[in-house]
Amino acid sequence: MDGRRKTVTDLDKIRAAVRSVRDFPKKGIVFRDLTSVMQDPELHLACVSEHLNVVHDLIDKVDIVVGMESRGFWYGPSLASDLGAGFVPARKPGKLPGPIVEAEYGLEYGVDHIQIHANAIKSGARVLIVDDLLATGGTAEAVGRLVSGLGGKIVAYLFAIELDALKGRARLGDVRIETLMHF
Image 1: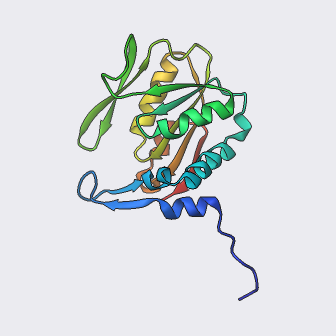
Image 2 (image 1 turned 135 degrees about the vertical axis):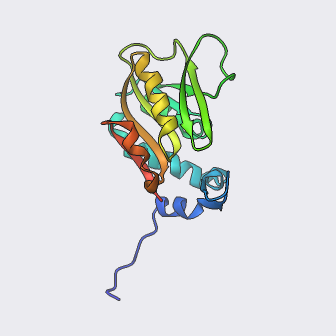
């Protein structure tokens, strides 16, 4: 040994707390579960802090943070507050009152839809899109289409976890993409 000591970082602790659930939601899938991070107040705050660390340069340069249902709701409002921005939820159908816009996206086993309020994004608004996980990129791409369709400018996507083998980032175009952990 060369005498150097490895320092365990908050990100190491967060990664160690992520549960791997085999065959969920269907056989052959390894689900990366962040609920164990949310259950621990220190780890949750550390995860919010790590998210902010990677986008600290966007403080006062983001107008809206869009959080995707449902785990984008875990970090989106805190980040919006820290960045000096508003928060907009992107929801599954039937959850938002009033006029909405909707995008369809593909799943391994069919299609789904995501919605936001039609007046949630003003033309020219600078938008950060947040979720817990980037897998195939379908949901994030759909939310990006909604934001762009309303005239918003996507400044970045931010994820806690990226499943590299599924190549979801390729679907998101030439936009800044930040992730805390890769699996």
